[in-house]
Amino acid sequence: MAVVTMPDEGVQGTQDGAPGERLSRDAAAQHPEAEDADGASQLQVFDRSILLEILAGEENLIGQVVERYLGFVTSYLDLLVAALFAGEILQVRLLAIAVKGAAINIGALQVSEAAARLEEAAEAGDLDRSVTLFDQLMCAVETFCSHTGLR
Image (tube, rainbow, N blue to C red; front, top):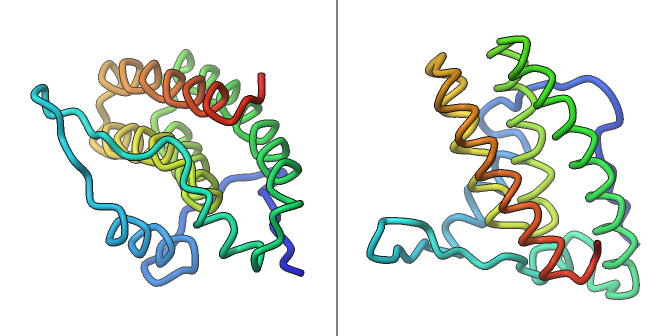
């Protein structure tokens, strides 16, 4: 049985070749984005196959892992709000990296993509755009919650 852990405290970025980064690239290759007329991504909300692979096929663990993920992401969204209000753009970037990695590891593809866009804006030092992209991240999380039937 596989064990899935979510970071509990502190935020660290990943280096190229780190497991989370590799999974992120692999998932992107397996799930090429379709774009609608506005150029918006049409990734799946939740790709169960990614989570099932990590869980070695143990379907009975999916609900528990998704609930734990939602607890994690909720606390990180609160930290993101605080960092945005404080203008701490480096902290915004690091938190976005954590949300992106956790999302891709459980198959929350739209959440991961929204967090990646937030990370890019924060890396560029664009606080105004980061605020806008945070709103999009919140929408992606809400969509994930609705899609999984949690919350």
